[in-house]
Image (cartoon, rainbow, N blue to C red; front, side, top):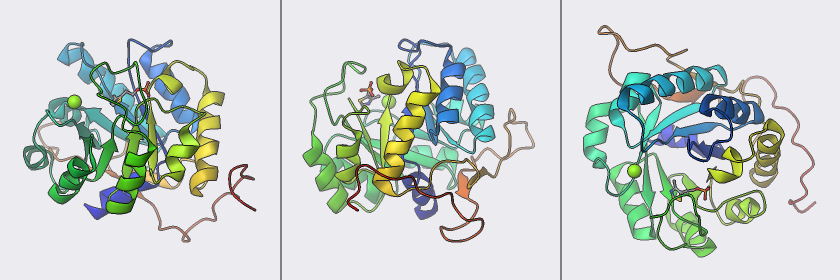
Length: 267
Ligand code: TZP
Ligand code: MG
């Protein structure tokens, strides 16, 4: 889905929640990250009851909508539908792509984790909107993440894939520039954001991404969610999810803020 891919491509900072690591209540942490410029939030929860998950996902939907950000739910298609999320992220052992697409519809954003370039190419061929390259560096956050694939994985995926590449695993302020330079479209982080708990840290991450990628500094104003603020689905609502779309193509509409001086880019 090219349109969905474009949506993810411009996002840069993709944060993934983890209640066990969170030093603030989850919604507060997500609110701080959104204020700091995160453009995609993945709600990832492994141990919570479904009802509590739906309640949290709906709160995150309201927050992400207010900031013009994307909400992705890890694994749980049912929770994504119940909360009116923009899409789901699927691991290699989760719901098969084609079944997820059938349930969620053409508008949903579907991302797939890949541990190798072959898995990434397969995800692209199936129609995934983005691929999660995982894990790039060693991480203590996900015990079964597997061996670190390293920067070479990002470079090769960058050369061979058309769809956006979201790198994850051990990424932080110190190494994110290297990952973006190697060809990742977005960097996904858990501990580097969740454990930091304050907006300035997230803003700093976002500024680094802006410098590296030439993305406009975040304002939230270039993105909108066609669904508006979220609502619990009712019987009269469609069951497909509506992803966020850019309000205008780059170069159109209101002028973008000036790109800050970038310490990484050659003059
Ligand atoms: N998938 C692959 S690695 C990982 C996930 C969810 C954990 C990433 O966490 P951190 O703290 O950013 O290394
Ligand atoms: Mg999974």
